[in-house]
Image (cartoon, rainbow over all chains, first blue to last red; front, side, top):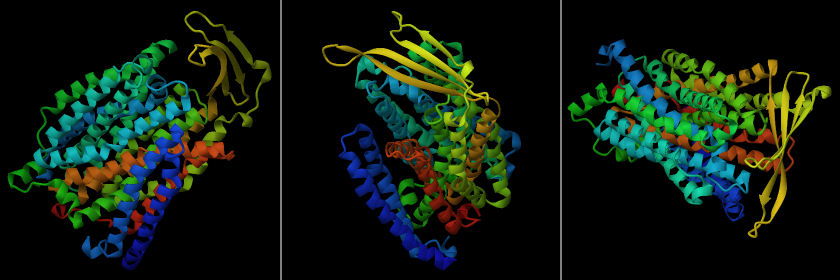
Length: 75
Length: 510
């Protein structure tokens, strides 16, 4: 179980990067430059609020998992 | 020391804390409950969809700043004490809510109306960010070991009960006023009433003592001098903050807002249910569901917090789409058989007071439901030369009855049960994994990011996903908004299941 927790750290980091890509390139920027009011609101929410929290937070969480910080002996 | 606190004393603590928190939630939710009418008052009326989305964004702004309120007031709470901090948040919330009820409309002051609404909404968010963590910590620090889940679950009921009270106040206001009066000024009443409630709560709270654990830590010189640095600059503590967020609070937030807000929005905008009937159905489901916060809080004392919370998330992931499909089917007109001979049509001609000509078609169906279609013909100014033309809009209200009505209550009730599973134990869970000296700061941040950001953005993100799917002619567009809570809950479930240790508690609680 402890090894699975460590290996999954890679998954969380990958998920953080993937989320950052989709949030910025697919949802955030295209919506902000679309010119439609409802799209701009949505773009701002995605780009400046959700992206930093999910990407940075999940990335750090993944790093901690990968380096064994969540091993039962360290909790 | 905790064991010496008698039951009567705890009930006094619970009562005073819960009442204040209940009022804060009430204040926070009346904005959401009245979002449709607010969108017509404080935003330009030429594009109703954009106005509604802007209202949702303003509603969401209140959630987005909650983590900042958690940091600001959490720090204060860990430095000077829990009691004084949540007194300040109470007054801030009450003042901001009262002032929202006083703002002139967009027609009177133009752009300043949405701007002032946004500022006051931000203040509401800051206040709530500070309040909840303080109340939960305060109660938990009075509770005996092994009973924190039970006692803090009373605080957990306040959020749902606050929404329930907000719906009741709105329904009562509508009951005593005509539709036109409510639309003109009556919608302000629930906001203005808040100041009275806050004053009563202030009188009760001001005579309370500081929490025993904080008093003890302060007397021994063990309080933190820099709670922010100790909470988030310390790797050992930061990993618990992140685990609390991604393994519990994130999923809890989306389950909570799907059950209580997305369901309401779905009933009104997708099922086209009459607004009062939708409020009533949600209110009944909340009334029957709320006691389960205490049931599952108590259960978490016996079997541990982890699997009680995660079971709610798993059930949500597996059943949201079938539940919402069933809700949709209950009101879908193509599934119903009309009793054509009972159809009625009435025409309300335009008057000097109301320039709209309204043709109302009432259709009755074999299952007891009926719908009212209002075909509204209204003069509108179309350019700067004040040229006018007639514009026709159609507004449909569906009214369910009999078995369909009760089936819808049951479907909402199931979602409320999911909420009670994830939310009942979470205050105790968060309080227990952080030490006394940085507890207010450390527990408030993941809770308010999970709820305020992941949960608070749910109406805006899900509405957007559903609108996009509808534009793309997706036949099940009404279910597409659910992907947001389903994916977030699924990720949270996996993280929580793997990484949360069943007996995870801060060292000073061992």
